[in-house]
Length: 456
Image (tube, rainbow, N blue to C red; front, side, top):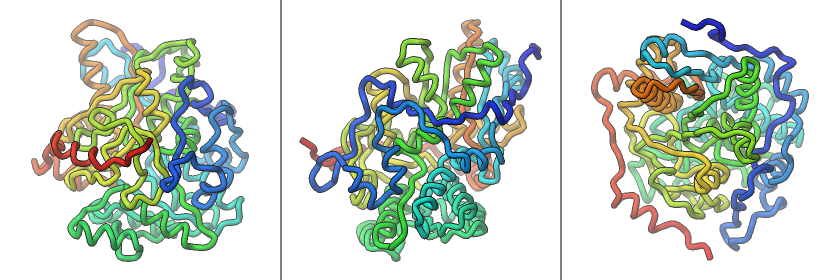
């Protein structure tokens, strides 16, 4: 076993990023603008400021500034859990008997247990700086809601979370962590909002979706004085904040002269994947280096691999702006049997543009295969991975086994977004043989696609 490279590559505080990297600055084809749902014209800063914090609106709309300085207050908060380690998966390599070298960036070393805190603290900081009373949001698996509740507690902000109903019921402990940090948590769709009541009237037995929860959170934000809405994925500003993942990863690799061949990330809305690949994709766009970049999504919610690249509503209630993205349709609701996050119907506009330009790949994997990989990883690497991260683990293992067949010594890097200790119900279903691989049919997806908004 080659021990020249340590098991864990740690950076010190002085090597932490001092600025977020805005990938859009290096994109030749910029992501399409958000559109006003009424006029179909690009959303203005003034229009967006009614929903989002003012400073975040500036970050959302900026396609040209390459770096945004990270405020000292946010950097000080980051120091509680960052820099996060880049780990060489020696034990997994040994188990697979592969010549591939496997590394993972581990983002689960905080109470929230995921990467979501990187953007949550930034958004809470700007809300506090603006003098707001609180924020509203949605959460699927609960990682984002947990992260935001922690950040709001730190800044003494009220936090109202709408949690996808099936996750609310499957993950009571994640819900209680949010409440411990002072957040109110409501299962979505609910009877507390106009849009929630409408969705329940049309779909009385629905288990909910992120699109539903977004609609409710936005309604409460725009009808409550001193509140704004914040989002944990998809938006440009979120991928900007999450670039700390990729910046740290690249610094750690550069320390030992390591150049990855393949970079893999799970993809739901795009925050983790976009953050991990940001500096590497920047190099690719500038012609400085080339990498094979793979987005991995669930076969039960396959927006990249089976969706349409079109303008669509960001939410089921159709109250949010329109975004051009790979989408299954804003009223698409994943199977209740789908475990974990990655439940969003669309994909980040930035990643959608990069994918459409052929700068990255995408693949979908079945749920039982994902949990088989998660179990294999846990047994040899000693970390119980989150279901979301396990999509990336699945493909990392598959690529390493291909190297075993060909004898190629490729270097693989993937994102381990967090831990799965709040996902034991899903692990139980897998172990008891109660987990299946529901995959939507072409006919089902065609029905959703037919209802996409018509944009001239």
